[in-house]
Image 1 (cartoon, one colour):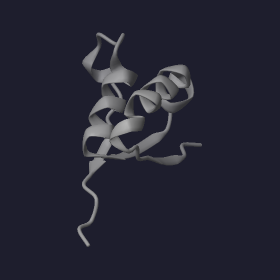
Image 2: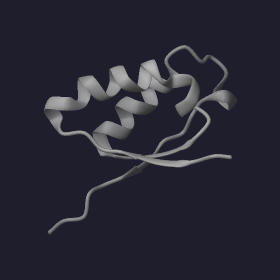
Image 3: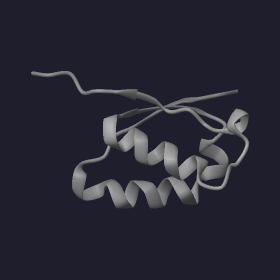
Image 4: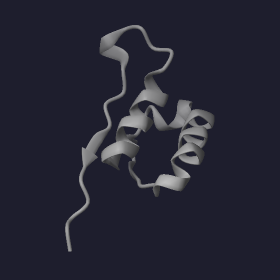
Length: 68
């Protein structure tokens, strides 16, 4: 069963988030991932780094934070 996971990282933590995603790539690639702008792009790149087949790539839903 797919789980929905939201990933958010402050600028100073984005490198740690990417390292965590790479370490958990096999599990995360099977889930539905939502992330904010830059974090989403970095997570998507980390998940798809070694995937050549376009149809097998993971798509991360990117959302911008709501303004106050």
